[in-house]
Image (spheres, rainbow, N blue to C red):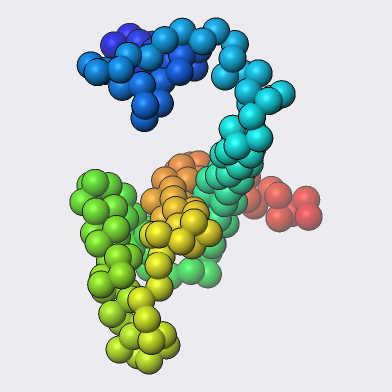
Length: 183
């Protein structure tokens, strides 16, 4: 209740105030504005409308990519690894589980450092003469969004792969036999 319900109630209540950079406690407190923010977004203020619609659009893009890419690629990876012609199944599963075996805070901190302008990725690209200047991976909005989706896939696909692998490994062999006989 403390970490879920209370923050939700607080954020709903904040939506009906003028809480912004100019109205911060303790000096200049925010006040209740009622439905003014809602009418500004949908009827009045073009800046608020454009900001809201941009964030809403990105939220939908993120939800689609975060859900479907992890699900689809995790399922395909599980099917590929569990195929009867693939050898060293345990090695492949272990290899793909490394991103989630390391604590995510540590791995994401290392990735954020590697993506900085003076980070390992930009240094490598410059050393290989693929670029002359550092690529603004984390500061360019489009590149940052693509990077977030790719990192989410890097972390999320192994979870889905393991779920599907567990299901596939528990299907009895006689069901596969009967399915091949039935065509």
